[in-house]
Length: 347
Length: 257
Image (cartoon, rainbow over all chains, first blue to last red; front, side):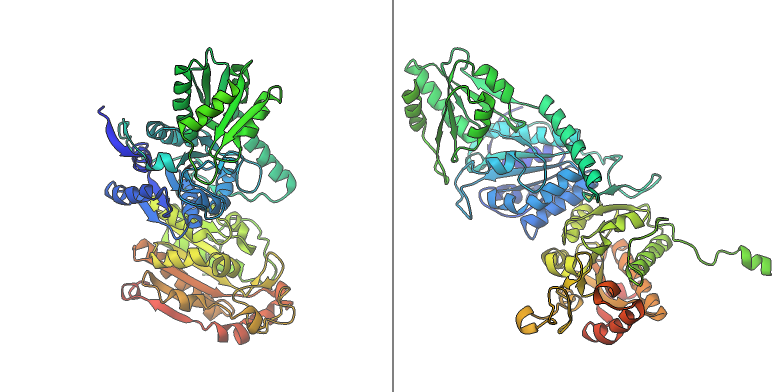
């Protein structure tokens, strides 16, 4: 298939369409708005559902509603919008309905700005809303990988009846890259046995997150944790780059990892043996894989925040080695030279 | 003749109503409205297509009482959830069942925009002027002067503002095609309420737009009244503030029966 030049946000939208997304509900917020605009053009033409919601709260509850009927559904937003969605996100997970949410992260906290950032790591990877849960969180670092992971997000959501989030950032959303799109997937009107489709020829289905009585709620929590256990055992994804002979490991994800790769190539030209460990799933986090491949290496965590994944890296390394950190906040994006300088300090 | 009369079924539980006891307080109108909705679902033969959405509030467990597919929404979000369902599966008949705290306070944004978009959903709005499940706090529809646990000196409009008249408000929106207010304190009102519920569903079946039936209701427990006293309060205090009537019946809805 020939490559086409696409903006990240438009690629997110087209990938969802090709994955068979039957309903999209969203709200404008920079730097993800092109997803909404693209869906507004494409979805009605394809006979699929599109609504510009009254708020992100409206959007996530529309997603919840559609997800209850067993269709493939997605919303996209950016940081403050994802904060507003936390109520619905918690209900979606507790109700065991599949849904996909893309957060094109921007600088925060507060209204922040519209530059690329990774300050939502804790909110994305550690649950975000009330109660005990995590979403599956996929962290692409290029537009092509974003396409691939959006498609995978729908499959994982269906497989586990779970919320799958994709954390892009303002850089990935706005950058244009040559990409290869997958074939359009036929949308079949599915009849999931658990879905609300009208109780024709079967007992009624109920989808709720209300379980009165502590013992009942505990049972649901144990079931949720069992699913998370299975996800943790089976769905860890990561990439290593120039890692075999490395004395120093950069641990980084998303746009930060992409910049780190350039810095690593530059350092290699200067004879510094540095490599990259890049989590692709930040939940489930590749704790064991990182610990194993980082044996005997120095570690430098690079993020576009104050040091959030840093805590997961420290957990993985069990405080046996010092974990160094370099981060920029508030939408400031470091140059490869900035990271190279940090590498040289440790080399 | 006597034998024939005995063999005829005069009255029975609607098929769309589950054969379980409800948790509602004695004298509460929820039970009547549940039954009427179930009767209409039976009569229109839409049980196989219907999806109900329960609110947060006293009717949070409504999904246990109907024998049709049901979801339980977050507080106030039922109209957004219904929008998501109906747009994704337009062949289904989607309705929400919401109280005044749910629809008229925390969920005003969702109900106003669902109505403005003309979503093809049916909304049943039970207005009893109080937060029942949390134990009788002031609602957006609490009458001026009314004592609740969070307006212990009576609702003072200078401090706590004025009640919201939802039917009047939604009737101003072009997307809303059928907005009526009914009650259920007398047999006549109950008959009129059932007809309105039927039209609200028919509006959706015919694809005409957004419909809502508001039911001026009671709360003997939190009002501190006997069931009969509470019905009298509805008639003498609530209905004068929330007059029964048709607030919006678009021309294409008028011929529906």
